[in-house]
Image (cartoon, rainbow, N blue to C red; front, side):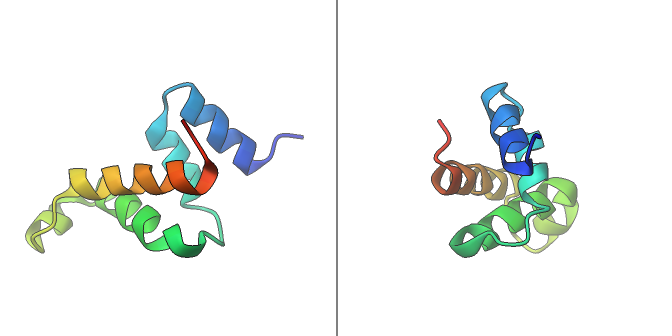
Length: 75
């Protein structure tokens, strides 16, 4: 049986960082990385809003990817 975590790691390994982030955004417990992951996911899906409030969606997305790397020991 394939778990969500194994799907996340498989997506990441195949180069689908956005897909990995999409999967992670459905997890209930993200611990200390929750804010970065969820903010990055939301910024990717609503970039106009984040630009309006003075945030750079690309930077937020990169921070989400960095959080995934740290939390799930991705390379």
